[in-house]
Length: 473
Image (tube, rainbow, N blue to C red; front, side, top):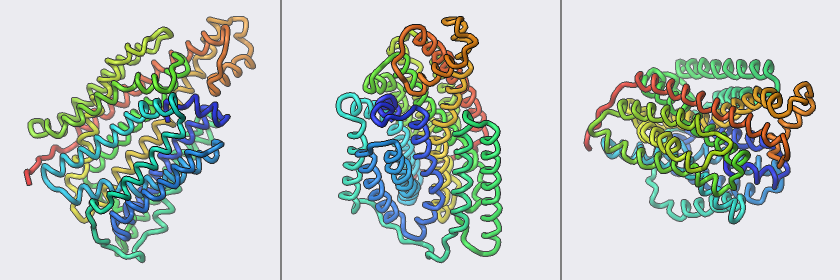
């Protein structure tokens, strides 16, 4: 839906920030319910929970497809599909992890990582085709077809017996973790509206999450089953690997949002051509994520992922020079491909190395942690990178007005109108075109530099991982 921003704004008579909020809340709600979902696998059963999620996802996607307003889209997409995604994602990882071992497990979990990342990357092209030649609504309708296929092929999913009873469900822990995650991301989302209040909400969210950790530790010491076994985080690979996934998905999701907005608002590309411009990232990600498991027989997971982070940094730096007013879509190919290739090396192996030391009885819990990290990263990515972009726009308006319309330098009303034009992605004429193009160009270069810095942090985290050896079984 990143490539459909302008069409969503027009069709639903809304604003860019509203669409950004819906995108963020979809992944936020998924992340908020993920830990509860991971525990429900032990109570309901992995397969049954996965299928319940699939049915719920089908209901949500139908509502999103026929939505007539941003509010209805929010309910269908962000709320219902968000909860459904939370039920399905941890179950997917734990079903695969519980089915295979050794080299087959590495390859299988790599496929899960590849498919998740590939789906995120191929989405812009698919969404572009739907939006340009049909409607963004058909994109949601196609999701219903996938749900039907899942239900038809459900007998091919292995069955796992539940291991816990309903009485062991930690409802209090689920509520505390949900509130903490919601507060954290809402605080991040509202940074550009009321900075002081947002910081207070972020701090409150972190305090609630700290309370959740204390509550879970206390519950376990009292002999009760916790929603999340906090002691799992003593495992360095799970702890560091989850942090790596949060940052990588934050960078990819936020970067796609910002680049798509640039391609549509400055270069005036339609949804299909926007998706086509992003395609090299998809190709690089798919190729290198597929190569990663095979290369892991010769090089360690850690080395391959470190190489991937360096490649991604190079891709970000190349792209930082591409956001000119006369840029051709073809000029994005090298940077996009290298960035995607780096992500491929990291995402192809990150789940496997995160879960390598986790005992079988804790795989469900650990899969919930990694899946929560992915969804939280996606949610914060659209929010944080979107905020960086908006802050860049704010900062560039005054400078651009001084250059192209000096007579309006002290006219705050004019500058507010320029920002409103950016928010609504309106068609503007005259000097406003030059102003908007200039500020977005400068803001995008800043976004790429920030993402390169974040990837440098990922590189440092990868060096903290413990290498793993694969046993052929």
